Length: 108
Image (cartoon, rainbow, N blue to C red):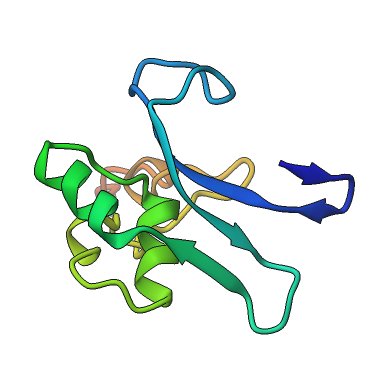
């Protein structure tokens, strides 16, 4: 939601297989990152209801909810210590193949 250069987000429950901008089941909050302090409003009773029914927040939503003091979001946040490979980089094991040692010749 929002306008160009003025983002405003809704926090919704949607089917996992539904398109991102597709049909939603329920909207129960919103997030406005442009005001100071950043504004997050969530109906916590609805959030707990959907989590109890098996809904899982996305990684981004769980991080945002955790930053604003909502408990129990650590289980849904993916580990952030994965190192990304740069452009043209290969795995360290495959980068440098080990050459067989060359035997020295005996002088007679």
